Length: 154
Image (cartoon, rainbow, N blue to C red; front, side):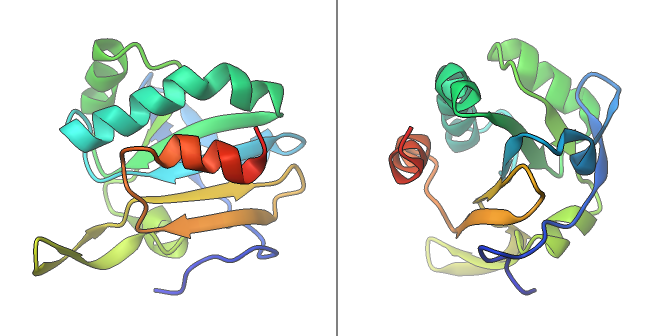
Protein backbone atom coordinates (compact mmCIF):
# COMPACT_ATOMS: atom_id res chain seq x y z
CA UNK A 1 0.00 0.00 0.00
CA UNK A 2 1.38 3.45 -0.84
CA UNK A 3 2.41 5.60 2.05
CA UNK A 4 1.52 9.23 2.61
CA UNK A 5 4.15 11.91 2.12
CA UNK A 6 4.36 15.62 2.98
CA UNK A 7 2.14 17.64 0.68
CA UNK A 8 -0.38 14.84 0.12
CA UNK A 9 -4.01 15.48 1.01
CA UNK A 10 -4.82 13.39 4.10
CA UNK A 11 -7.61 10.93 3.25
CA UNK A 12 -10.75 11.80 5.19
CA UNK A 13 -12.33 9.22 7.47
CA UNK A 14 -15.08 8.69 9.98
CA UNK A 15 -14.40 6.09 12.69
CA UNK A 16 -16.07 4.97 15.90
CA UNK A 17 -14.39 6.30 19.02
CA UNK A 18 -13.88 4.70 22.41
CA UNK A 19 -16.71 6.79 23.90
CA UNK A 20 -19.33 5.65 21.36
CA UNK A 21 -19.19 8.77 19.20
CA UNK A 22 -17.88 9.02 15.66
CA UNK A 23 -14.89 11.17 14.75
CA UNK A 24 -14.44 12.60 11.26
CA UNK A 25 -11.02 13.96 10.35
CA UNK A 26 -12.38 16.78 8.19
CA UNK A 27 -14.37 18.10 11.17
CA UNK A 28 -11.03 18.98 12.77
CA UNK A 29 -9.92 21.23 9.90
CA UNK A 30 -8.54 24.52 11.11
CA UNK A 31 -6.23 22.85 13.61
CA UNK A 32 -3.43 20.37 13.15
CA UNK A 33 -3.88 16.70 14.02
CA UNK A 34 -1.41 13.99 14.96
CA UNK A 35 -2.89 10.70 13.74
CA UNK A 36 -1.01 7.72 15.07
CA UNK A 37 -1.60 4.07 14.27
CA UNK A 38 -0.77 1.34 16.78
CA UNK A 39 -1.21 -2.45 16.68
CA UNK A 40 -3.15 -3.31 19.85
CA UNK A 41 -4.52 -1.57 22.92
CA UNK A 42 -3.20 -2.58 26.34
CA UNK A 43 0.02 -4.16 25.08
CA UNK A 44 3.29 -2.93 26.60
CA UNK A 45 4.60 -0.96 23.61
CA UNK A 46 1.26 0.54 22.68
CA UNK A 47 0.58 1.50 26.29
CA UNK A 48 3.99 3.19 26.56
CA UNK A 49 3.37 5.13 23.34
CA UNK A 50 -0.17 6.16 24.33
CA UNK A 51 1.03 7.35 27.74
CA UNK A 52 3.81 9.35 26.07
CA UNK A 53 1.19 11.08 23.90
CA UNK A 54 -0.97 11.63 27.01
CA UNK A 55 1.97 13.18 28.87
CA UNK A 56 2.82 15.43 25.89
CA UNK A 57 -0.76 16.46 25.14
CA UNK A 58 -0.47 19.95 26.68
CA UNK A 59 2.65 20.76 24.65
CA UNK A 60 1.09 19.40 21.46
CA UNK A 61 -2.14 21.32 22.09
CA UNK A 62 -0.16 24.51 22.70
CA UNK A 63 1.36 23.96 19.24
CA UNK A 64 -2.16 23.67 17.78
CA UNK A 65 -2.19 19.88 17.47
CA UNK A 66 -4.90 17.44 18.51
CA UNK A 67 -4.09 13.71 18.85
CA UNK A 68 -6.04 10.73 17.49
CA UNK A 69 -4.96 7.12 18.05
CA UNK A 70 -6.16 4.42 15.63
CA UNK A 71 -6.03 0.64 16.07
CA UNK A 72 -8.05 -2.34 14.85
CA UNK A 73 -9.46 -2.86 18.36
CA UNK A 74 -13.19 -2.66 19.10
CA UNK A 75 -14.47 0.55 20.75
CA UNK A 76 -15.22 -1.38 23.99
CA UNK A 77 -11.57 -2.46 24.31
CA UNK A 78 -10.43 1.07 23.48
CA UNK A 79 -12.68 2.43 26.25
CA UNK A 80 -11.02 0.08 28.77
CA UNK A 81 -7.59 1.16 27.49
CA UNK A 82 -8.50 4.84 27.80
CA UNK A 83 -9.81 4.38 31.36
CA UNK A 84 -7.00 2.10 32.51
CA UNK A 85 -4.28 4.54 31.46
CA UNK A 86 -6.15 7.85 31.91
CA UNK A 87 -5.80 8.69 28.23
CA UNK A 88 -7.30 12.05 27.38
CA UNK A 89 -7.52 11.91 23.59
CA UNK A 90 -9.82 9.91 21.29
CA UNK A 91 -8.97 6.32 20.43
CA UNK A 92 -10.56 5.23 17.16
CA UNK A 93 -11.51 1.77 15.95
CA UNK A 94 -10.54 0.60 12.45
CA UNK A 95 -11.50 -3.10 12.65
CA UNK A 96 -11.53 -3.68 8.89
CA UNK A 97 -8.29 -1.64 8.54
CA UNK A 98 -9.77 0.38 5.67
CA UNK A 99 -8.41 3.68 7.00
CA UNK A 100 -5.10 2.13 8.00
CA UNK A 101 -4.66 0.79 4.46
CA UNK A 102 -5.51 4.15 2.85
CA UNK A 103 -2.98 5.84 5.11
CA UNK A 104 -0.24 3.25 4.40
CA UNK A 105 -0.26 1.97 8.00
CA UNK A 106 -1.45 -1.58 7.26
CA UNK A 107 0.71 -4.08 5.48
CA UNK A 108 3.60 -6.47 5.64
CA UNK A 109 5.96 -6.04 8.57
CA UNK A 110 8.77 -7.95 10.21
CA UNK A 111 9.07 -8.70 13.89
CA UNK A 112 11.80 -10.87 15.34
CA UNK A 113 12.66 -12.13 11.85
CA UNK A 114 9.10 -13.22 11.05
CA UNK A 115 6.96 -11.58 8.40
CA UNK A 116 3.31 -10.87 9.07
CA UNK A 117 0.55 -8.55 7.89
CA UNK A 118 -0.87 -6.05 10.33
CA UNK A 119 -0.76 -2.54 11.70
CA UNK A 120 2.50 -0.73 11.03
CA UNK A 121 3.22 1.64 13.90
CA UNK A 122 2.99 5.01 12.14
CA UNK A 123 2.46 8.69 12.82
CA UNK A 124 1.12 11.28 10.40
CA UNK A 125 0.88 14.99 11.19
CA UNK A 126 -1.92 16.69 9.28
CA UNK A 127 -1.89 20.47 8.94
CA UNK A 128 -4.88 22.75 9.49
CA UNK A 129 -5.64 22.68 5.75
CA UNK A 130 -5.77 18.87 5.63
CA UNK A 131 -2.40 18.29 4.00
CA UNK A 132 0.22 15.93 5.36
CA UNK A 133 3.08 17.80 7.04
CA UNK A 134 5.00 14.75 8.26
CA UNK A 135 4.58 11.00 7.78
CA UNK A 136 6.64 8.46 9.72
CA UNK A 137 6.31 4.69 9.34
CA UNK A 138 7.77 1.77 11.31
CA UNK A 139 8.38 4.01 14.32
CA UNK A 140 9.40 2.63 17.68
CA UNK A 141 6.97 2.81 20.58
CA UNK A 142 9.60 3.94 23.07
CA UNK A 143 10.91 7.45 22.55
CA UNK A 144 8.84 8.15 19.46
CA UNK A 145 6.77 10.99 20.94
CA UNK A 146 9.91 12.75 22.22
CA UNK A 147 11.47 12.38 18.77
CA UNK A 148 8.30 13.66 17.13
CA UNK A 149 8.23 16.71 19.39
CA UNK A 150 11.88 17.42 18.57
CA UNK A 151 11.22 17.10 14.83
CA UNK A 152 8.25 19.49 15.12
CA UNK A 153 10.16 21.92 17.36
CA UNK A 154 7.77 21.48 20.28
